[in-house]
Length: 555
Image (cartoon, rainbow, N blue to C red; front, top):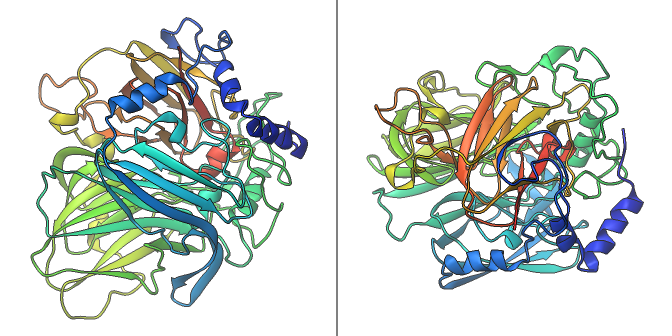
């Protein structure tokens, strides 16, 4: 397997420092049709130099002016080492924003301008990605693609209009840093909020390994990347897939990952590779990593976060899955939930007992709360453990840490069953372009990729401004993948049972969607935000081993 050396990493860093990388990125191309229209997939041909809109091109600035940036909200944030109290006698040395887990909630009103200055006190370069926001391309926070990395000891200001209300979050897009404590919720308030509720509860779910018995996410990635040998993968449903002499971009774990971020030691802490985790909901294999803890708002189930309300209150719960490798099945004991939004965008209201959230997904629900003490349980799907928070509206003992409310086995809604609310529904129309994206790789070789090619910032799948684009994901692996598109929201197909005459694309508007093993998922979006945009699996270990690529707007 070809690897990225420290010398190559230093060369890339030099290119960044000279100011040439972002411009150079715009002239490179990879998979895709040079014609700029129609269906395509595979490797394609290289386009002519300068054909792509770069993050610092005038088209990006023009798109920002059309958003009519409003009043400026200035914020300071520091990324640094921190000792974090996870509750129940558990603490961990990790990295965090301003020493908090999750980072402190950031609220802004849709239409305003955010000016956030990040001070990097970490031992590595970092960045901030604003997950789900359709923001200007040069603020998207992908080192080596849309910005230079924020080096250790430096600071960087992100300044952009915040266009859409909803539930979002932010985290680094540098190596596996997201699987430390570097994440925080971003709530964009609607100045014309249509929902009526008494209280709001932001619930951030996470799987935790950093600083436990010497483990780090970099060491976990190194362990996973050693694979399980070739051929039959054995327990857990991980099948082999031989790509021969394919150039994967690769990594050596004393050097750099495909994203260009230095990785940690080859191995530290106990083994964390998970075997035998299965879920029918996820189509088989549930995940790669055996996490020692699962958290709600930074707390273990032994000492859970408690939210207080009064009986009869209508509570808006904003759920965020900030995990690295875990889907969560979530239910609130003794209550049904009414789903109002997914990934920030409203849906036609639907009642459910439970929800399934892949990494990066968000759901908003409304609940009229009863009188008593109730568990909000987030089962690590297929992993036989759970995170817990407590809703308290009256007296009574707190639920046991291992409580499993019956609602977890009740009605479960998944995104494909939801329909977008009429104001945000994608207009009917056939796609001008279809981009076919085969999800490839295996646990045996840990060679996750898209169309058999591991990530390189030179890759491009071309689109043009004004097109209706269809992304056609075909999962050729034995694992599920939550696929995330930067800078846009896409529409799922109209749910089965939708009313007569419903157009394709009437499904929920999302930026992250689960693609089950052996299945195909088609999603549509309007190309209305020029630049270079990442498209990747939001399993941080799959992405960092290569399951990422770039959609590039052609000039």
